[in-house]
Length: 241
Figure 1: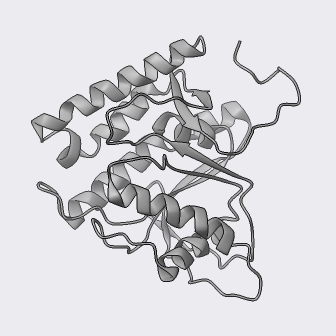
Figure 2: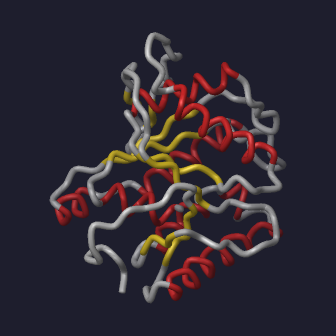
């Protein structure tokens, strides 16, 4: 959903990317390299000053990393509360998580954790862990506040599936003009999608998917999402025709 991330930030939304794990170990990576790659991807997707001025808003994009163990993510109260603390700090109104049917155990575990943390974050008279500092474009950090109880109105699911099936989304976000930045943000992870020859094809089919789902809504590019709760319309003005 890199195109959606970039578009929402440029439209003035406060977007916080949450890395639940550090992503290591991997065959070619290490902690320092992964951190540099993640920062580069953040820089690529972040709205430029020119783009912000064009929309007349001041959207921003930040990134925070939790300390759950990669390859060993489990559904625990402690992990749920760490995520709930981030939701409170952000006062999140919309949450995006991996689609719940997936062959990757960590993806499935994280999605369930976030779904339950959404509920935990609204509970009063219970404290949640203080979130770590967020990384910002330019390489600096920014402290996240300890927020009060909140309940995100929406949970949307993006497709990061390892299963060989075709997505059947509830809606498709128009990301026309953002595919190049999305591709560049993926290729920022050189140890994952550039150096390993077998993974280079992922970049190609992700881009092809963007063009395909764009064709389903009559645009040049699109990203599919699923929702368990119905979206409401107040008219047809915002519907891509």
